[in-house]
Length: 116
Image 1 (cartoon, rainbow, N blue to C red):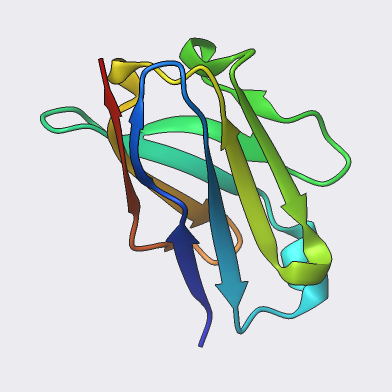
Image 2 (spheres, rainbow, N blue to C red):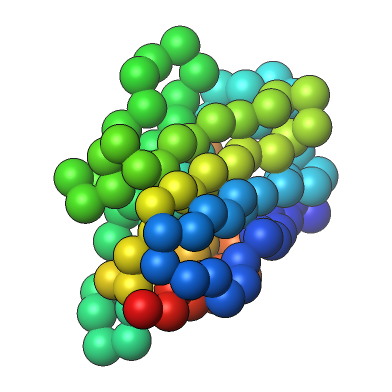
């Protein structure tokens, strides 16, 4: 059974950094390598929004609000995708989810809270 498990969330002051991880278990390497995987976030009262998208061989895509601050990457050998978040702002506070487009599968989410 394929699962996505996020980690790395927490409480940080504005201007700080966090690195989120999304580990895919039960997914063979060839499928993982070909998968477009994405980070989404959802703040209370808001719709879930796409933050970053990663496809091997293509330029990552970012929401305008995080460009220059967030970096998405992936280590295929570890079946893990990352989201490095720098210069965090209170408006980045949300539950962050990873998503596998091949599997149409969501992780359980990890809370990121940025204090002013």
